[in-house]
Amino acid sequence: MEIRRFRREDSDEVAEHINRSDSGWPGSGFIHGVPLTGEYVQEWLESTDWEIYLAWEKGQVAGYSTLTCIDSKKKPAYIPLLNVDPEFHGRGIGRQLLYKCVQRAIEDRYNRLDLHTWPANLKAIPLYKKMGFFWNPETSVHMVNYLPLILQNPLVREFIDSREWYGFLQRPLNLSEDEETWQGLEVFNYRWTWEDDHLLVRVDRKGEQIVNISSPSFALGLHLERQKSPLNVENHLSWEVK
Image (cartoon, rainbow, N blue to C red; front, side, top):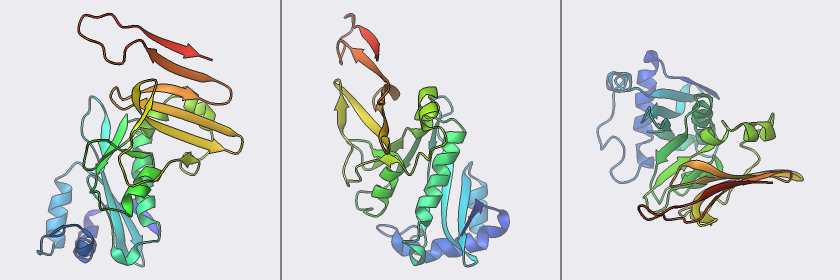
């Protein structure tokens, strides 16, 4: 299998792929009963600011993913579409396309990578979680990934070094919202384990920043006197380093 960027001459093959895959989309499908043409696909994709990655196998498009930036100030990236032809399900194509998008967001130093899916997407949600996405509570279903932010941190980079972040990331892959707390803060927990070594990074899901990093050799954590601070009431913040 080969993954590469979309080119204009791929338009007909992408149109055929989308038409073949329509049964895999919920409700009335993606094309709503009207098959796409190569000309339409070319105009559509060239009118976006998406980066488009195609997975090729056996001379045809087996899947595709798209990536874009949604807010240049906060620098989150977004995956508008990710699809694999039902004929090629179970071969790891969706995982490799998703990995490509996450890696690109890391390399471009975004703070976050987002996507949306639906609760009944039972195959995809565990894959998203394994790739570092969390189901944002009280949404249907907004998934957020803070690996691009975390892997910019020098302590994390030094710890991970040449290790592969994906293979050692430990996550519960349940089909539910991700709700965890630490020191009264609502957090997303990223854990890596390598034999007797480990690293835990917590991200405050409201403040969207790292609030705790810990390993067998050090711990760095944020402490707030009050988690909710009324207007004009003094609140104390401190960092503890061990």
